Length: 438
Ligand code: AMP
Image (cartoon, rainbow, N blue to C red; front, side, top):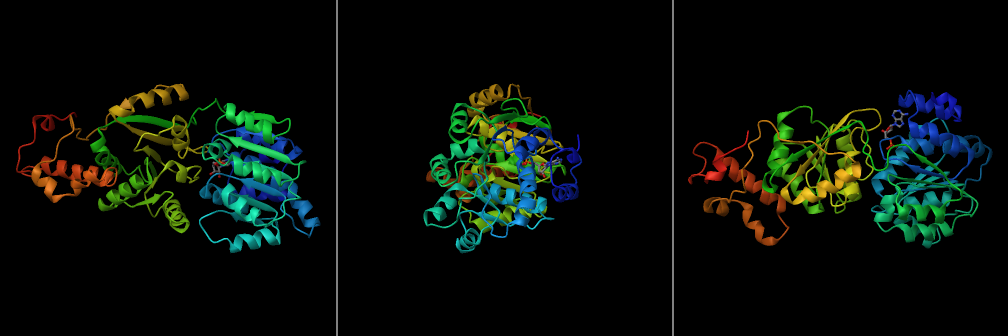
C-alpha cells in the first residue's frame, strides 16, 4: 500500500512526499478512508503510530477545494488535545501537511497572552487546534463562531479524562452543530472512554492498531535496580559512559524533582533542560526546541508536560522515578522508538517500586528483564554521610521535607564519590560500603 492509493488530495500527497514518508502506517491505512468518508471514528492507538497524520491528512484533503471556493472563512475543523505541547505539535504537523494549500490554521493554548488568539478566532481560520481550558475561556467570553464546524477531533481522550477536562469538553461540544463528524483518539480503551464515545460519537467505527495497552514493538525495555540515593549517580554514569545516549528524555515524579535533577546534571557538565508545569510557556517551548535541535542532550520532564511530545530520534527514555500510574509507563516509553525507529526505555526501580513494577508487567503482558549496569559501583546498602560531610554539603536540606530531594541525592552521591577516592574521606567507610557488586 502506498499513499497514492488512499483518498488524499494531490497537494496533500505532495507534502507527505516531502516529509519523506514512504508508506502509510497501519492506523493511516485503516483510518484515512473512514475519515475521508465522514464517518465517526474511535482510534485506539498510541503516539508514535502515526495517528496524527491518520486524521489530519484526510481532513485537510476534504477542505482544500471547498475552502478555495468559499471566501467567508469559518472554523471547519476543531482539534482538542490535552497539553500545550501536544497542541503545538499537531499544529506544526498540520502546517507541514498543508504547505501547498492556502488553508488557515490557529492555536489556542493557555500560558500566553490571548490577544492574537482572539484575533484568530474572530477572523476565522479553517482549522483550530486547542487545549480545552483556554478554548472554553475564550468561547465563554463570546469569541469565535463554531456553527460551521464539520469535524471535531478529541485527541488523547484518555489523558483529557485523567486531567479532568471532560466537563469543559462537554460545554464546548454543546456549542457545536449536532450534525458533525467526531473522531476520538485514545491510547487505551476502558469503560470510561467507552462511555465518552457513546456520549460524543454517532455509530462510530472502531480502529485499533495494536494490542490493548501494549508498548510499541520497536522499544527495548530494561530495568535497572538501584537504591534511591544512587539514582542520580547511575543516571550520570549512563550518560557519561556511552555516546549512544544523545537524545534522552528523563521522567521525574514531581516538578521540583525535575528541576533539581536538571540542575544536578548541569553541575556535572551534562546539557539538560527541564519541562514541567511550573515553567512558563516560553521556557517550555525553548527547552523543547533546544532538545529537538540537539543543543541539549537531556530533557527532564514530568508526566503531564512531556505527554505527547514528538521528537524524532529520542534514543532513550529513562524513568528516573517510577511512574505513579501504570499507564503512564506506556506513555513515557512511547517517546522513543517512534514510527519506524528503534528506541531504548530504561526504568530505575528501588525496593519500594517492586509492586508497581508487577502492575506494569501485568498491563503490558511482559516480564521486563532486570539488569545491572556494567562498571557502576553499586552500594550494598544506604550509606550515611559522615559528620564532616554533613556540615559541608546541602544534605541538611533533609529537614525541609521533599524540598531538596534531588540536591540531597546529589550531595550523597558527592559524599560517596569522595569516600571512594583513596584518602577522600577521613573516616574509614563502613563495611557495607566497601563491598561493591561488579
Ligand atoms: P504520531 O503517532 O502522530 O505522534 O506520529 C509519530 C511520528 O511518526 C511523527 O514523527 C510523524 O512525523 C511520523 N510519521 C507519521 N506517519 C508516518 C509514516 N507514514 N511514515 C513514517 N513516519 C511517519
